Amino acid sequence: MKCRCGRKAVFHSRVYRITLCDECFPKFYVNLVKRSIKRYGILKSSEKILVCVSGGKDSTAMAYALNELDYNIELFHIDLGIGNYSKESLKAVEELAQTLNLNLNVVKLEDYGFTIDDVESKKVCSACGIVKRYIMNRFARERGFDVIATAHTCEDIILFFIKNVLSGNVEYISKLSPRIDGFDKLVAKAKPLFERTEKENATLVLTLNLPFTPMECPHAPNDIWKEIIYEIEAKRRGFKQNFVRGIVKLAKSVKAEEWEVKHCKICGEVSNFEICSFCKIVERYSRKNR
Ligand code: AMP
Ligand code: FES
Ligand code: ZN
Image (cartoon, rainbow, N blue to C red; front, side):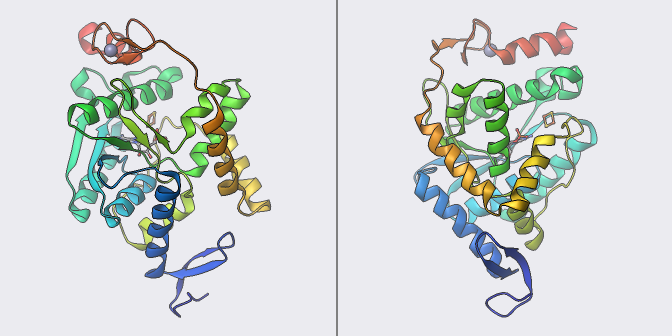
């Protein structure tokens, strides 16, 4: 297959009815990200953005696109201490920072006295989510960033939606907006890749030979819902992107759960309880307390 410019194709999409080569695809991709940001008001050109990179393909693609679009960005990585996976992830983000000539900030979970590998297996993913959200927010606020960008894809958003609807947590759907403004001590959050697919992100990083790790977190569960989403997409082209746009419309109309803003007695960060979930995790797993 050939690109519209005549060169050998690297990307074909039946959704966009387009076939592109290694030179035309990156431009097309960056333009799609630009369009989402503008249409949904995800980022402002005046903002200082903390771009959270895991070392995987999705956040690598996000860093490339936001850099190409000339946003004021710095990279941010949390070394979670998950054996070889974290070592490879750190190596990838260090190479990415060099390639894109961007400042990289790294926080090591170890400095809090524990790693994700210390958490018991049943609780590991939820603890990891709490830790990441806490450290990203605190770092962004303390260093004067206006917004935190994460590379959630349309597949991530659909999965979150299905799981929360199935478990009855419909008020959580409000969290799926591509832009959530900050309040109190919480910094604004942005998902500039919410309309992008994993395949588009993978094609971008492979085409441009950007550094990333193909390793998956060893704690990541095999997700049957992900397979189901791919099966529907195979039968109904465009399902994922159409569905995610519907979810985002819904997210705007769903009233977020009302809660009284409290501040953690230990660290002073925003919390639902007297002591925040992060401090509870530190209390439980930190070597000092074992
Ligand atoms: P996850 O929570 O693993 O689904 O990741 C969602 C997003 O959070 C990724 O797309 C990244 O933007 C960001 N992220 C995940 N892991 C890390 C990490 N170790 N350091 C910095 N950002 C991360
Ligand atoms: Fe958090 Fe795997 S990255 S448990
Ligand atoms: Zn706390």
